[in-house]
View 1 (tube, rainbow over the protein chains, first blue to last red):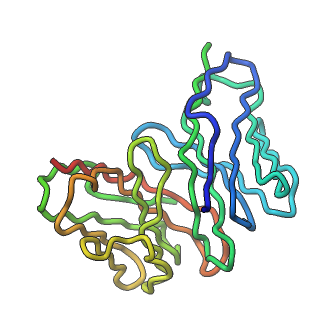
View 2 (view 1 turned 60 degrees about the vertical axis):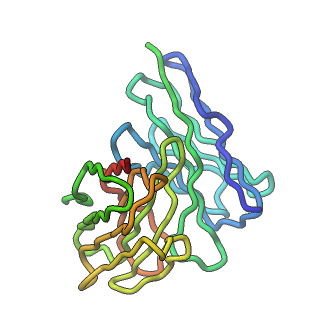
Length: 114
Length: 115
């Protein structure tokens, strides 16, 4: 069956360290993968999109990798800050000609301690 | 640019009652989505519109849920009758262009509690 797994429900790190979040999937062939941030009581906010033919994407302190062989994406936040504390969702395109139809993981709740 | 607007923000009803949620997408966005997000889960797509046509409603429980997007702008999602398991946050999202895989812009959601 098709599955998306974000391997940690929660991740606690110290300020200044690099946070690494993992998203694994099975039985999909997504054309792209996205990462969103969700704060309590709010809707998800788009952060980064990476396509199947891209290995890595960066935006400021954020970096995403996409390995279609391993069926895995890694999301890194460098020099983490308490303001980075939130739930991070990965989402992938269903593939097979779907038009913008995203499947979301359960999310990883990141807590950055000062 | 104004974001996606949703109302109400909170709703408490008893089971078997009906409820409706409203969404106003970002101006000019062709595609509109309704998601259900149960506590501790990621959003699950219920229905996707392009302009005022339905693209995907395969996960919409059609015996109790209905949605419409009149004139290709605002949308309403209705539940009738509600069940306890419908307690969730209902998120509306929009994206700019038809048939192009785009990032999605989410509203704040409507938190529904069914007692």
